[in-house]
Length: 183
Image 1 (tube, rainbow, N blue to C red):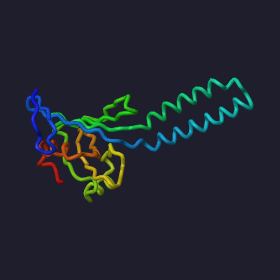
Image 2: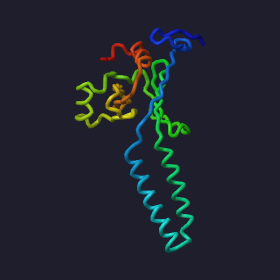
Image 3: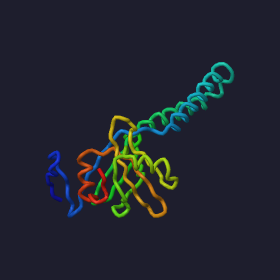
Image 4: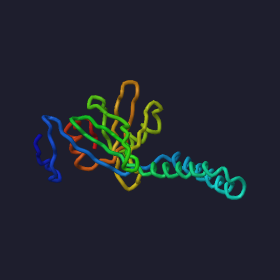
């Protein structure tokens, strides 16, 4: 394995043979359904506390279970996304509370159809009109940040991944997919 300067920000890029490696971690936004579930569990636990104190003390184990579930769900609200580029393939993973990592998708280089800015009118139009196109948002959803859309064809499943890419990651993508990028 050799180190080489990448010419953009003078940070080392690792080459393993002809494969290049780059990774990026960004803060993510949990799904709204997770907030809803947490609110329901908190409400049920609160009612359980009231029932335990004033009505039926034997419900105490259920209240303890409620607090454990609340603790677990609150930890799952701390979400990060990790993008890894290696040799043309892009792996996207979701990290919960910096403890658990779940791979969302691996995009093979031959599956990449196009890479565009997410605010491009064609991307917005595709997301609104095409019912067979699956949108996978792997960002924080901040309107001030410029995001990128990676179109991938996984056989019968066509996806568009919304990613928060920095200049270094874009440089890797440009070196591999320059004919598929309209940025």
